[in-house]
Length: 620
Image (cartoon, rainbow, N blue to C red; front, side):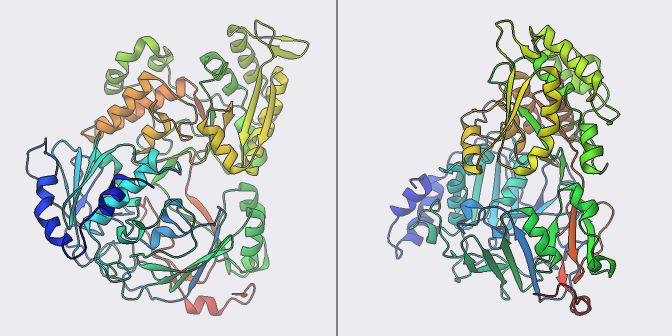
């Protein structure tokens, strides 16, 4: 892969002269700094300007973790995604724990990030640059130091993502990555870089000295050098990966790490589908399963092991991810989905309350916002600050944005929603459609056809009742199931009518996904409605450039209103806390009520006494 970082390094001086040349040249090569105010380095940073960090500079560990948690034992987890490479570019199972990261998010506050690989962090006055000073003691597992060159190489490599695996779209806000000295690196952005702290903390820092001679985009099952609390020690294509805890991990005593990484071994087993994985859990082959299907949550775990108290249904706090678990996205680049009246009509034909009752046992709630469950969700009428943001776009916005609170029409959920279908039929008539011999046709007599595209079998449970409702209107609706690779290719080519895009939730606070999901500059599958709306673009930029929390919230709420009233997408079920089913052989830290992100599995530990009492399913 030809990248600027790779080319520069491959043309480097011999190893014996590199340190001297590096020292002499770094400052002369560094770009001119437009923001001349001095940098203030701190131990932590926030996405929100003026935010007061919860933890002081000398904090010993996060309060919600058990700093004295015992080490030992094995944790076996499922993996349902492809498992044919361990290259970090493809985000293989468990990769996050085998590489170091610049910063770590505190799970018990809205927006606090603390130095991990980074010893200190500084934001420029204009918030377009962030500078990291690395810890001099940081080491790769092979003993070599982790340097600014590794950070620069990692960001440049991932943001040039030639395979379009998702990194490039997520990192499109990065404009430059510059080495300032051997332990100092600068990231420049096209907007408030602090809004992207979630992604900065997610990017794995990979070893330049290893990947310079290899193609990180090529699949491989050979474990590369790593630096994190776990080391990848075994991998079998399509079957499993195994991570072993590194006892002498350089960062084991950092405040952000104390009480974490307690299992000696973490093993990920590959399963082709959820049905087989659930059976493996019930048999005791797996330790923990995340249950996303309400039917199974309600009925599939009434087994003797649960009656004995060995198999437990629990929840993990996940307030850091809110919004909708699913969003039905219409491709606005295609007719007739470029017509607001048609999109709104299609929303009235979707009786999601029936699905909640009949298919999900009443376990779900409807999301009436793209940011449902967070302070960023709109409600009521726009306030003064929101109106000021919306006003420049009034001429091209639906008038209802200013005059009516938004909500999806509710139903009694008992069957066919005749009122909703009647409203849909009236809107379609205004758009020039009529029913001829039971078929909805346009002015030219062409039938109204819509195809729902998916690669996930579970999506059919949402699509099938919807197809039935659309058929009552005379719309010819079909479900097209294809393989994963073909699905993403068609999304990239905008070759679809409607879909349920994977990864519909929104970070709290919102960050990188605002541009990737909704901005016209986003051309990958993340912009599932292929949006090209100047009002949406302006509000995304306003949110990403907001310099105060109030302005950030107002911009997101205004954006929410524009997205909702244009019916580009229909948020379906609201995201809640994560439901898990697990064998009760683990210790879990006591968590406060105010939690955004539960420390699983990093804050759990193996409990020998609990494990000893389990006899059913003790096959591993």
